[in-house]
Length: 430
Image 1 (cartoon, rainbow, N blue to C red):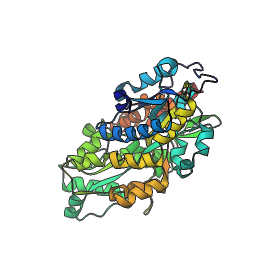
Image 2 (spheres, rainbow, N blue to C red; image 1 turned 180 degrees about the horizontal axis):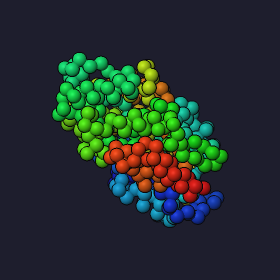
Image 3 (cartoon, helix red, strand yellow; image 1 turned 90 degrees about the vertical axis):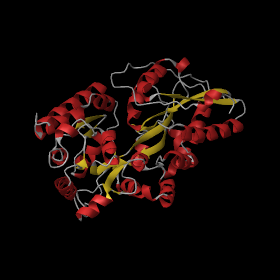
Image 4 (cartoon, rainbow, N blue to C red; image 1 turned 60 degrees about the horizontal axis):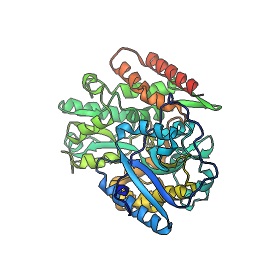
């Protein structure tokens, strides 16, 4: 690489919120330079060096194959991601050409006028044919494609093999059995949470909603209508919030927990079970339960079913303001390619978005198999609307769960209020 700055990988972003200012058209009509410097922003990881090495190899090869082109890769902290991206959308002079962004943020970035439509290039890209359908959905707004999926993350059920053996427990085959098993663990081992849950753990709770046939929202023309207050969704909300109590995970201790808190509790040996992601594996391996746990897909309502998981992850996109569109799109494809995703799995454990690459990594790494099975069973995604950023940042769902587990509201009242707030956000987003 030609410049040390290229050794940094910049972390870009969760989407600008729904209340972010609308940007003007910052594109550069007719300008498509095939030389010069491409600026790239990617997410900074806790241990970033393995990711840097993968990206450096991609960049070195890209530069050798594109004479006169240079690539500058930069990292920014997660805490400032939204401000940095919003500023870049409004100031093309300081904007990068290529960014990594959270896959729930696509619609917000598109509404803010920041991302380039790469539908034609994506469709013609050979690798794209094997893209997981949910991953492809995460880069699609109103039928147009605004990036390439970079990696995907899903959650499954971690459980303590030693605790299960000591208590003579079977792995739960349904959500009802999961709740019963959690309470049996707590009764026999009051020093443990049976299944550690969190009132602020939105993506750990949603599989309960989806498994019971509920939805976050339903599409209505060009917008969405909240569905959290439907009978099916309420059954899922009730099943999840019933896990908060002295017989499993006391509300006083668990109502404020998020996903990281629940994994920390499990990894430190304080829980019999937890809902965690493929991305949680390293933390659990580094904890007190190393060698004493296993992972299976989270069960559904009926035996043999797998509860639908949220398909999280990140994407790579090209900014609309780039003056190097052809080069930027090519670099986007290189960074999100099958080869790069396989290397990122080896380096970081990121699950590939390509179904064939995912099968390959599962064959060589057994811990991946329950997550791949979960993906194969069908995943869910949040509404592809710029309103989601406002719903998420306003903590609409955590507030609903916490009001229920604290006893301030029942399921009907809390879900009705959450649905109203969601509909306000959808209405404001247009």
